[in-house]
Length: 297
Ligand code: FAD
Image 1 (spheres, protein in one colour):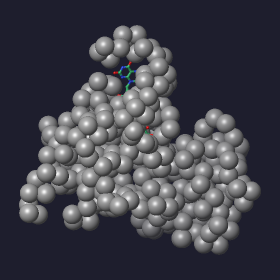
Image 2 (cartoon, helix red, strand yellow; image 1 turned 180 degrees about the horizontal axis):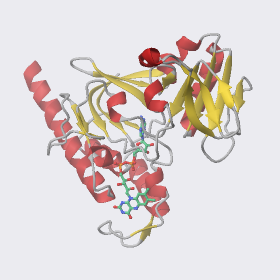
Image 3 (tube, protein in one colour; image 1 turned 90 degrees about the vertical axis):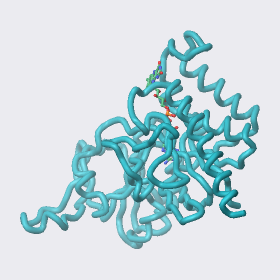
């Protein structure tokens, strides 16, 4: 099935886009978490959301869940690893599945916290953000996953079917539910380390392993699975404005049919701004779909 609009992110931006998209009668795919967004549920008290004075983050999250349920909008609990513009549609890779959609709304928030030491330099040289894309490179080899969310657990099982050995660093509370083939690590990763090399070989430097607070674990590859993948990694060719996705006032990106909203487009990081931009983004997507339909006639 090819959907009208795929929305990536279940924060206020993505949820707002989904609600209005549903009202406009579009077929939707909403990717995110069962708990919606940590940035909602972790807020102690919210004082600046119009009409909801002094609401807790947990209460707001519950209200948003009920709103989605009442409108029959399911959340697809998979992490989108890549979005490819295919001409007249987008292909979205999520876990081991591929989805198709005529338009895409990026509402995946911003990544907080620093990248691990060495991560940027070793990206594509042993460091990856997508198990499905790169697991095959580690057939009969050793790989590690540093995961900041539970949604990665099935991907760890999948990697363990291919690689000889898989180490899993859960960076979240509660023990992970992974197969016996996956070695769950208790240590804290602090860096990804490159192999020593001559200065002239720095351009082709390779991964040595994961440096933890107590040892160096030698691996051939390491997957770093955060809540949010940097937008330009998610969508090849996406124009950025510094660390944020470049958009115009219609929330259009440089890629036709691809829109962005919420924290991903810049500061101030606020619920009401995210929700407002989500509304604009989906109405722009609806108008864009109508224009495409007119062209085809
Ligand atoms: P987010 O809320 O960050 O949601 C993004 C969602 O996308 C997440 O669920 C994430 O898991 C999901 N996602 C990311 N990548 C992918 C992917 N590849 N595939 C699938 N899903 C993905 N703002 C206020 O206005 N008032 C406040 O009082 C306030 N208090 C705050 C308190 C705290 C503790 C924090 C952290 C923030 C607070 N904020 C507040 C800011 C507010 O939380 C953010 O501005 C807002 O949540 C941004 O919404 P968003 O939809 O852009 O992104």
